[in-house]
Image 1 (cartoon, rainbow, N blue to C red):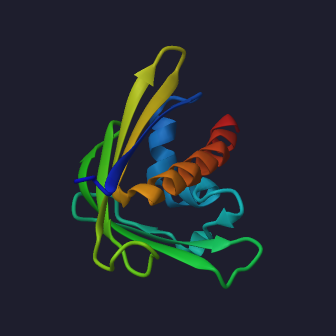
Image 2 (tube, rainbow, N blue to C red):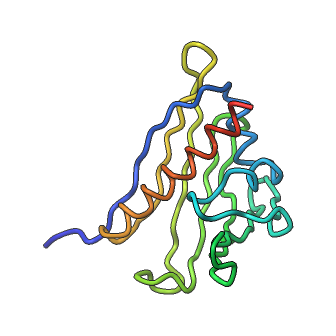
Length: 152
């Protein structure tokens, strides 16, 4: 029997201290400035965070060329260690290829690297195998926007 799901695992080193990378994920103003793949944006007025265990993370990505195309995110925080670990989950609705109610977990680990850099380890899933590649491309594209934000 073949496994039809996959956990996405990505590692990325950012040229910024851990506290700044953490803030990019937890501060609504910063999050709105970088999140979403190139060609998508997150209007600041759609971002609502309550960064605590049991708190929430809500936002809407909007396609830059066709604002009628949107992708809402509505997750909950399950585990938080400031500047070190964020774990949350989302029960998805309306995503082609994922049954409504599928629970996707996101785990972000923030590690110090030499030279004031940060190594981020991202784990997300489970995804159908064919969707894991799309998620990886989306994160990679988003991270190019995060690199630019952190360079300011």
